[in-house]
Amino acid sequence: MMGTRFGSVDPGILTYLMRQGQLDSRGIDKVLNEQSGLLGVSGLSSDMRDILTGIEQGHKRAKLAFDIYVHRLRAAIGGMAAILGGMDVLVFTAGVGENSAEVRAAACRGLEFLGLRLDCKTNARPSLDQEISTADSSVRVLAIRAEKDWAISKECWKLAQAHQRGQQPRVLPGKSPSDEARERQANRALIKSYKG
Image 1: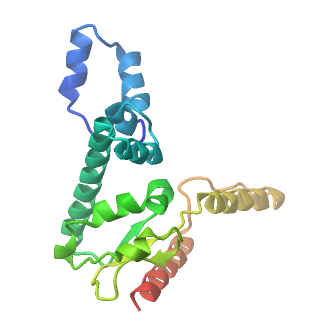
Image 2: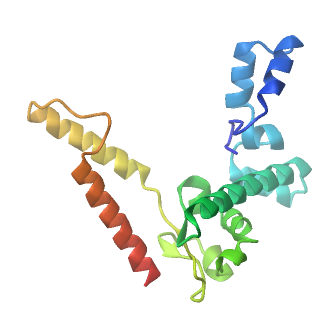
């Protein structure tokens, strides 16, 4: 579930709405991409902070939006753990993952069967780039800053440097095999450092 986008929906609902004359293709596009997700379910906002405030104020649809969001998140985590045959690390990042201790706690609740143990006190603290699982957790849980701005800046720098050298910038498919190998090695080292 996203802020304003639908996530998953039975396509039969869309064709039904079209047959009933309630929505045309533009209307469906607007509903699916601008009026669904947290906003559509809660009727309040696409921002998780507003959803949490709504829950505190007793807003039932805000609670429903939160519960659906967490259910879908836990289903995705469980599905990935099943496909991978277990889990070494669970990383929370980006807007909600970085900033919502409530979502992190709710997402981890019920995952103890995987060996995951969340440190509630550490999770509640607002600092980032740290482990938030207990010392006896067999699955490390991390809250990591996304730093999308830094990643975008690095790519812009690469384009500018290529332009100055008179080279054709490589935009797609992206990284060279050696860049990807270095990035994988750095990621493994980061995960290993957290695992101790």
